[in-house]
Image (cartoon, rainbow, N blue to C red; front, side):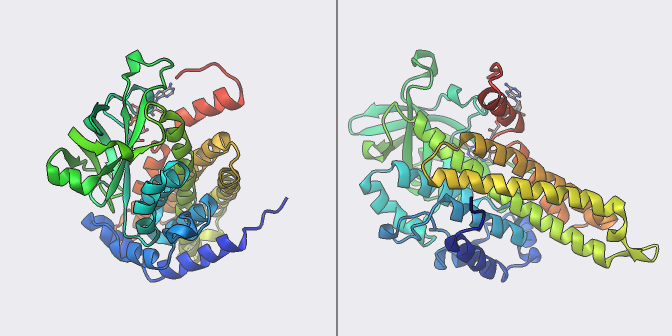
Length: 392
Ligand SMILES: Cc1cc2nc3c(=O)[nH]c(=O)nc-3n(C[C@H](O)[C@H](O)[C@H](O)COP(=O)(O)OP(=O)(O)OC[C@H]3O[C@@H](n4cnc5c(N)ncnc54)[C@H](O)[C@@H]3O)c2cc1C
């Protein structure tokens, strides 16, 4: 058993760290306050090839795997972006992973080279007002119209629509009530976002939100969005296995980002606790400050191991559902616990926007609820790993 990261992943750590070093906490805070996409660092990462790691070399990418993408996101989030740095999930995750594993040759040639250099961005549209955890209940439909599909329905909380060139839209070509088994009748379609917006058939409304404001999360409305049939990813009616194959990497990349965010919060808190003196000694010498930070640090290292294992399994083509869920559960928990403990460490100053901790805390909280809520992961662990009865 070899726990060392491969040279490819070590090179990713060095490369992403070098890019991220040019962007300090003030940069991320400014983007978050202004609700603007961090296009400068995104462009730099694209130019360096750090966004196309999992794109095969024949399409201009790094020819690597999910492990390297996870390491890139962990490193980026550890640099100060916090858990709000969603763009490794949206584009290398939803975009590249989906197309590499399930796209047609035509789709790959058209899109992957743009992802590899950071010219193309993605969003992923699954959640609906009445179907979040219960994704099987989605009602957004795609109906055949000659050589095309027409998508009609509504999605909610869709992140990055405003920057996206392409959307992976999860639709039903057979309504849930008529599908046997019920997971039959899912069809995943590639929507040209800019074209559909220009046609007026697609529209979106950003949802004012508590954190993660470097990109929007929006309500999205489909009014007969026209999509050519050759934009189907996977099989018509048979999209459910593709969906699951996309959700595992999403969980792994999100877990890696959460762990990076925990690293950032712990490093910041440890530095502050070493420098800040109260009662004539650094506050970090007090066990009331030191031990909670140490406890979270131990949990972070455990979550990191599981996240890397899950990514490795995925890259080997082995089942990784249990590991991806455990990684997402523990990664999101340590992101929150680290931010909370950093907040406690900074005392009153934690509440000031001059310091990044309040931003990291706002960013980290949602990772326990999305992309998949903690209870649903526990339900998966209960049923799949402990054979307990199902509640969902
Ligand atoms: C900032 C943000 C960004 C997002 N980005 C995207 C995106 O890009 N694309 C996309 O498709 N979606 C996105 N989402 C949606 C996200 O995936 C959902 O919010 C998430 O899956 C939870 O669904 P829900 O909000 O409908 O909660 P619900 O399904 O309504 O659940 C509410 C609560 O009930 C609990 N619950 C439900 N059933 C059970 C049960 N059987 N046992 C125990 N507890 C249960 C849940 O765990 C949860 O805590 C985003 C959400 C947010 C907040």
